[in-house]
Image 1 (cartoon, rainbow, N blue to C red):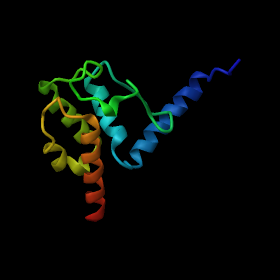
Image 2 (cartoon, rainbow, N blue to C red; image 1 turned 90 degrees about the horizontal axis):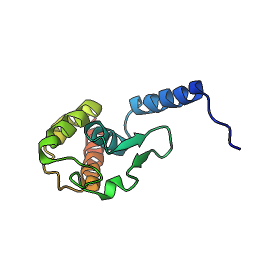
Image 3 (cartoon, one colour; image 1 turned 120 degrees about the vertical axis):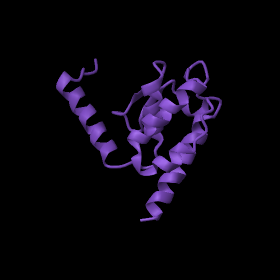
Length: 123
């Protein structure tokens, strides 16, 4: 029978995950997933796993308006605002993301990754 982690261990795992996020993004994928989860009650992110896991597990292959994600065109500005909060260094690029919920999430994640690389190269 597997050992159930204590509440303190679970809390520490969460603190580690938050610290990893504060160290800076690698490619922005987790920030995209977290911003989606902040808008949609259908999506969750487990940042304590490496790599992080999402519900639904196929999140990046879906569109924002997919029934498993449930984000509408009207909610896209909220997603973008949450993403800017997580990645303020590319706020100008995030503002360029179309507010179209039929976008494939992977394409937005790819754009965020390229924006982060571009921003890092500019320093």
